[in-house]
Image (cartoon, rainbow, N blue to C red; front, side, top):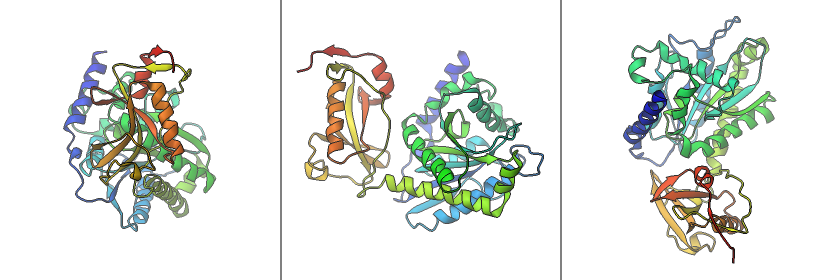
Amino acid sequence: MQTTIKYLLLSFIFLLTCPGFSQNINDKFVVVLDAGHGGKDPGRPTKYGYKEKDIALSIILKLGKQLEKHKDIEVIYTRKSDVFLELHERAAIANKADADLFVSVHCNAHHTQAYGSETYVLGLHVENANFNVAKQENEVIFLEDDYEKNYEGFDPNSPESLIGLTLMQEDYLDQSIMLASLVQNKFTDKLKRKNRGVKQAGFWVLHNTYMPSILVETGFITNKKEGDYLNSNKGKAQMANSIFEAIVEYKSNLNVNETDYIVTTEPKNENLNTDQVYPDYTFKVQIAASSRKLDTAPYNFNGLEEISRQKNGKRYHYYYGETSNYSKIVRQKSIAKEKGFNSCFVVAYKNGERVPLNKVLKTGPKKTSSN
């Protein structure tokens, strides 16, 4: 329990002091590409002679080359050669760049002939299989000279150590899942790879980034057929192209008429005909986020009134409605969707600070009769 509390505090301190909170000086969409492992860390062992660090680097370089063709995208690499990087260094590169996306590429391994691709976002749904994958990736910290100092209180072998890892990524989980889903769909639909799904686990490298982040396990190099494919020029090129298309589609989804729309999921809530009031909280419908500072007049938002604007980092977030009545805000969300804001979602605030909606709803409302 003491380890968990200490780690939560360390996570919170890192969030407040992270150098990446300085705003980008340009308006480009910044993507940080991370080739897993490298140098003295070869990655997953395999009897077939494949090296995860080399496959991951090749895919990343091919992916970056395609992204660099887009003038509005800036690509930053954590490594472009066979060098060893500590996990906290990889995240620091992304944070310093104030990146819009962090994409880490790896290869999977298993003692069986398992095969297929899976993409991870940070989370605490640590089923045994997910925990074991994260554990193997996190164990690279033991190769670092000062791992006791850099990862104080963190034990890759302990599920309890993962509890603090969601703090940094909580606000970006929905965007991360969106990108991860697009990647998996490209692998499945275009390349006909086995889809092992979008999963959540406690990867340190994802925890320390403060932007939408994913870790792609491209396939199993312990499977002879899949290992041959991933080690081939064709396989590397196809995997890189699929991730490229997913990133471009993700970026396109965030830019509709120069305004960014964010898809998210909300908990189902029954009995919305009865007013559900949370006196200590304020609900709003987030309808857009944009680098442009727009007038909150109705003509900019398809006739919607009650629009408010708040600057978060390098973007302005736009909200419709403001109430402590959850039933009312859900109805207002329906109105926003009717006005064309199909990806809008409800957010919650307490004393002016954003709080997780799920946690608010779990506290229970003060119910009143609906008029």
